[in-house]
Image 1 (tube, rainbow, N blue to C red):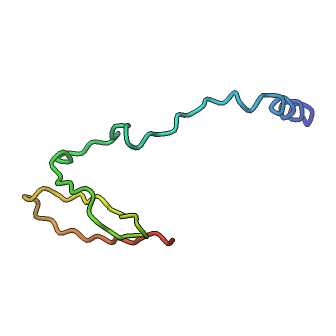
Image 2 (image 1 turned 90 degrees about the vertical axis):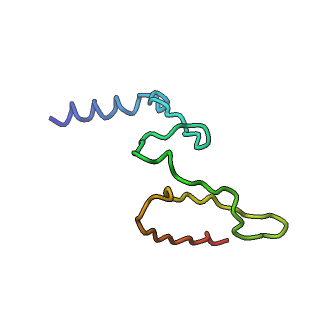
Image 3 (image 1 turned 180 degrees about the vertical axis):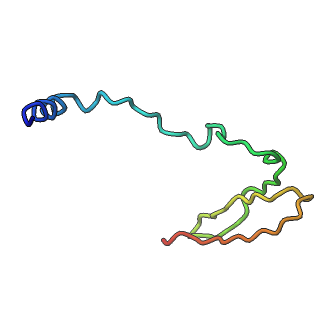
Length: 83
């Protein structure tokens, strides 16, 4: 009983590590959205809003708002990353 398990585990050690299927790293700027929801193309996007200045570098963020016809209330918490 122990011998087949030992032989199988030794065979796994002989398989090269590079034989696994390589996965492509996602390109967050070029890849399309996988999940599409109704109305997501109607959001209001405000880009490049000033957040903070660090030395001579201006930090900005993008704000995504629901369409103006939306009657839902939104709460948001924006927390800067520690430097």
